[in-house]
Image (cartoon, rainbow, N blue to C red; front, side, top):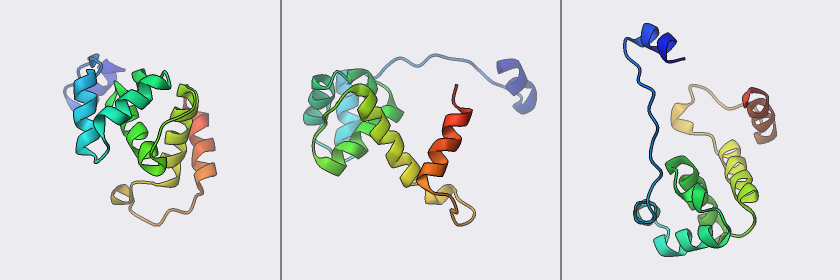
Amino acid sequence: MTPVLSAAVGACQCVDLAPLSRQEAGVLADSAGVPDQELVSAAEAARAAALAGVPLTLELLVVTYRADGRRQGTPQQLFASGVNWLAEEPARNRLSKTVTTTAVQRLVAAGRVAP
């Protein structure tokens, strides 16, 4: 895919991002208005610390933590609740017209294109 993107846009690099440290995850959570130690500790207790190590999935943890003030369930359940939130709350600033699909329809479509 890198050669195709390079040809299309002129430059493309394929890199691996290092996971966030516990401290970095805490700082990001705290900047989002969630008590950093509580969120990271809750993620660790749920055996979902790996989700806190990636900015996108950390955001899912932050959003779902804000919704109920705690984190419980398996990592799969935590991830699923975050994905459901994303499907229910589309980024309005990226939309050029009114959303006409339901969250369930968006999840089905996402499931079709996911590997």
